[in-house]
Each structure stands twice: as structure tokens, then as C-alpha cells.
Length: 110
Image 1 (spheres, rainbow, N blue to C red):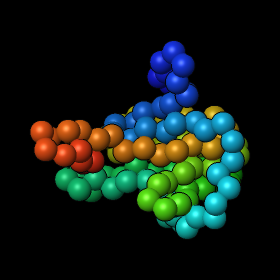
Image 2: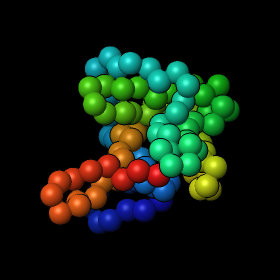
Image 3: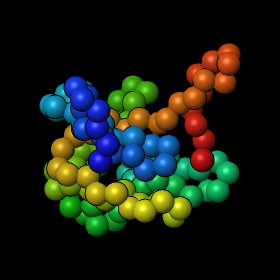
């Protein structure tokens, strides 16, 4: 886990951040039933919920253009090139790292 003074707790796996939120997400979202958070365009590997986390009730949802993870029992995030990370029980915003290329902000791609 990485935190800075005055910030919310967050975890990182490669170019994906999981920011723990204080409360519930109230809006209804579109479930991401396959558990894939992001698929690498170069390697084809994906950041995804472990099957055991999904069977324990962890669920991804898209609300607007944002992704959220609800993990009532905690969750494990896996990727073929990164070590797994364990998240505690809670609600998390899933944030993709961005970079500035001199003209605009863009999402970092795997």
C-alpha cells in the first residue's frame, strides 16, 4: 500500500491504482461480469479479479466513464507480469495512470 499524508489509501499494480473510498457508490452501474479491469494492448495480459475474489462477492461496475470495485470480503487482483495484490474489504475507485505527452493527457497503456 502506498499513501501520502492527507490522501486516501491506495494500492497500485502496474499502471492501475485502486483508491479506497469512504462510502458507498450510490448510482447503479453496469457490472463487468468477466472481472477484467484492463487488458494490455501490447501483451494481451490483463489486470483482473481473481476467481476466488469473484466467488466471494467482489464485483466491478462501470458508472459513467469510471470503474469501481466493491469487495465485501476483500479482493485479490492478478496480472501475468505483476505480483498479485490484496485489497481489504471496501469500495475502490479504479484509476488508470495517465501521462502528459506535451500536448494532452493520455492513458498509459501496458
